[in-house]
Amino acid sequence: MRQFRGRAAIPITVTFAAARPDEPHALLIPARKGSLPDEYLGGDDEAALRRAASGSRFEGESGAIVELFGEKGRIMLAGAGAADADQGLEKAGGAAAAKLLKSGEELLAIDASGIDAPEAGPRVAFGALQRAWMHEVYRTTLKPKQKTSLKRIVIVNASSEDQAAWPRYEHLAAGIALARELVTEPPNVIHPIGFVERVRGPLEKLGVSIETLDGPAMLELGMGALMGVAQGSINDPRLLVMRWDGTRGKATKPLALVGKGVTFDTGGISIKPAAGMEDMKFDMGGAAAIAGAFRALAGRKAKCHVVGVCGLVENMPSATAQRPSDVVTTMSGKTVEVINTDAEGRLVLCDALTWVQEKHGPETIVDLATLTGAMIISLGYEHGGIFANDDALADQLLAAGKASGDPLWRQPLGEAYDKLIDSPIADMKNIGPREAGSITAAQFLKRFIDDGVKWAHLDIAGMVWAKTATSLWDKGATGYGVRLLERFVRDNFDG
Image 1 (spheres, rainbow, N blue to C red):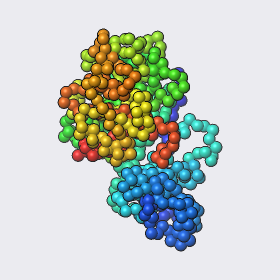
Image 2: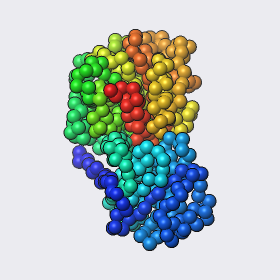
Image 3: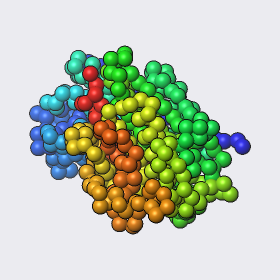
Image 4: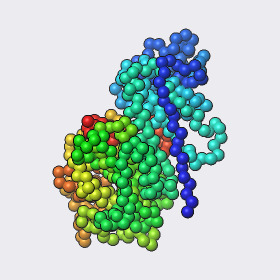
């Protein structure tokens, strides 16, 4: 069957210069809340911009924009929020990029020299790159005014320290873009094999080793839970293993990142309602975030040892599909009664968790998954949920989430919840009652964590796809998890 292959988005290039370019451009000046720079431009443009700010009641609030056309072209004053606003500078760049993306402007100059903060210019440009990402490869009838015009960004009046800091932001932006691309592509393109092939090129080019296990190999290992989910689909499953060792063998035990990669989730025999089912192409958002994080870490040559494992399957109804009441044997030897085939992510993850522990012996595991709709009921679209068996690990991830802009909120675990997934005919069942659905899913995964291993489960069901645009992304894929994982690794494992 012929499949429509997508093309990578054209990247926006970022450079540095001592002064504003002579060629036509838009100028962006970020301003903190309540502390506008003493001087922006000088001359008539300065006076006009101050009048525009006053007339618009601009006070530097995060994401606010004041715009005018001066002697040298478009000038934008963008709010960066209060000095302690973690993502204020990024949102200023993102708000400007949203204005300029299809405006006809091709070049944006950023002058953040009036901001007293380290890496101000790079952070503004990083925000602009995030917001400027678009996926229009299948839109073949766009009119000229509908096409993206912005192609270049130049950071002016930047310090040498800012220039040295830029590569990390550049690679982080590329990681976010990769995750968004994977989540956005249709499921006839990003199926399990398509996922592997899409990440293989950019990651291997940076030195990430790629290993895959196919269906027969996983069956031989006893991965009955993962393979049970996959058995209804014509698209063969894969276990994708990514490894980056920036310590050159000094760190013998890697950090393990495990991702749910259900490339399309119909619910299987327990089929979902038709309305909204098209969104289920993003049920591999956890795996996409891990791939994006590897792109960011390898790109900046992080001094850490990390193994990423993604269980890639498609959950389909068919004559060969898994049935409610089937019992499967996991790689660990534990048996699971499948009550609901739409509770498939935990079946994929449990075998991936067992495999990485047996193969690599990590001391710390973090898994990411768009696991439960119940998490959206609990936290909406504002936070991912975190469950952990170790308080210190939970605190590290919570701190990384706050600092990076991918926020988390901790959820409970406990014996009373664990009892809710006991089965009368097997070691456990794959779903509990309606109540505490996200917690019982986490309790299920916890049963596959070896004694002494620090583990955290991130349920990011509400975070990988946005129904509304913000300063840092348009409607659609957010790339949630890439910034979080990169910051978590940088703060705690990057030697």
